[in-house]
Length: 140
Image (cartoon, rainbow, N blue to C red; front, side):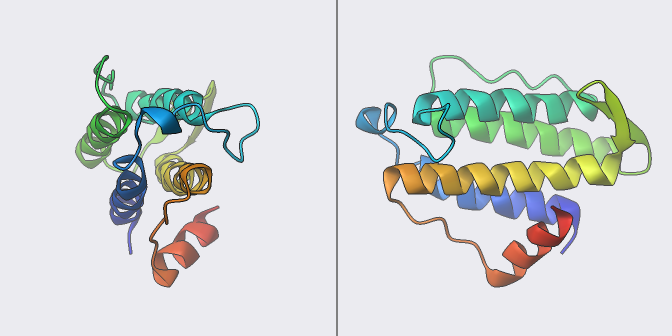
């Protein structure tokens, strides 16, 4: 598995959970004690937007749409940027320079960890293969 495939698979797993969200789920607490489901979604959208900016594209999520649509849009924009920009250069993340492969690897970690947070909060399963989980664990 490569880093782009990992991020795509992590997005697919996360979307399977967040597509099930309804209005009653948004106020539910998550394992990230500072966030309920709605706040975690906004955090994830903002965080993924930073990965997109690091790769050279602005990934503003559309307002007034579902959590799933916002996360899907911003993450697909980020993945497009990473495909175009490649993984050879260093990128600016959080005020620091880091190798592009490391930044892209962290994106997979963010998507799966927060996918798990959504899954726990809503009691919907997060389906991740053992091979993918092992790959992301090695990245982490």
